[in-house]
Image (cartoon, rainbow over all chains, first blue to last red; front, side, top):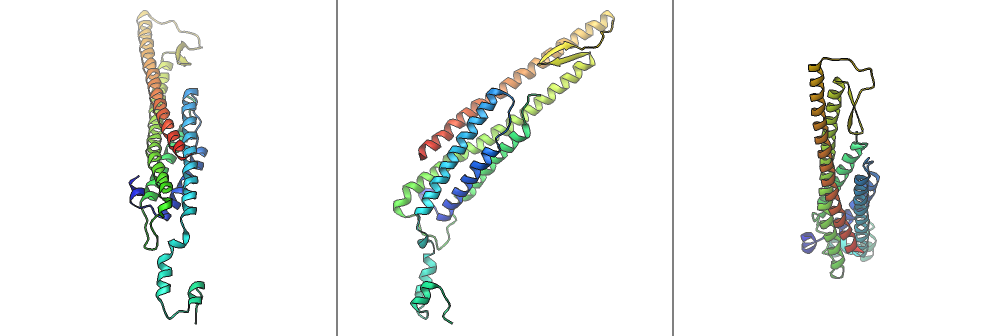
Length: 99
Length: 162
């Protein structure tokens, strides 16, 4: 929780979403066979609740990542290019070589 | 003995704990110099995301540990029950559905002291069997209670994101 209030990076959000999505599949596919009826029910309810939470976390991460402007993520690179006066603006935008 | 597929329970426990570890790794801010801070308008959603992860992580870890511990306890009790069955067979008894019954073969005529010894062994076997059954009920009830609590916690995390 403190991570968010300090700083959450876009790449962390991406990784959280991936982990949650893969985790939901892993947990559901790992649902075990338990012989005792009461135990089986407790395990099944737990697995479903965890998978549900993981799917929602994955969806939330997808939303955050999609709304987090990608263009800002390489702002430093663009800033370095903009500072290079030897490179024509058209070349800086396309990223093509001027040689 | 109990009809549980114990390796699959261990696998689920491992998957849950591994996921908790993956969340830990992902939550460590991997800020590169090119990454900006979260846009202000997005902060409530980003906060909700990491809060949810922070709340679910201990649920995954505790669930994984509870299932793994339960599996080891069940395996130990299965071994204990197998030892009781082996001891019962030495006295010509069989254990069916948790009860001790005389074996199906013809019963030998034995001396009075030997019969007394057989009855004493039978009583001891019954006590051991009862202890195993009680312990089995106790560990099952404990893990069920823990899973019920953790299910409620996971449901709370999901409800917070709906």
